[in-house]
Image (cartoon, rainbow, N blue to C red):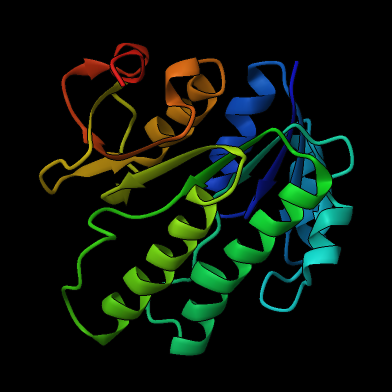
Length: 214
């Protein structure tokens, strides 16, 4: 059993990550923004901590990590968010969370980033998002943490297939959130994912086999 902290635990991806980790037998605490979301975590078999990522300090985040072995950052700004919110949630908050993990002695950090983060494309909002995530990814890579950076393309609510396509770069596509959550859980038990960054979409390879190929 591993002690895990999921950042963004009430989100559409984060809530699935919590469920998968609990079902796999891990001890899970989720960070949520509103206290009323704590009940949902308890129902899922997890503990909860309330923090606003936009304003939480590195020390605030560090205090949630006592005894934590793995941090999964699954939070992200919503579509149409202001440039300030994008910079906070998809950039600055990730950097503070990474710094907190280093200070707290966390072993492993899994970051959900975005497809084609190293490029500038699309409109103003997309470019701001990509640049924020690019800086956060680079900050994590520069640490001594056992990091994994996952860059999925468009996430959907479709039923999971259990099959993915993984690579340094992969063509545009989509991915059920449930498959991403399952992949994160399997990655924690797959040594080949340590200090690896990869793009991800649905594909034809079973998740475990795809991760083993890294």
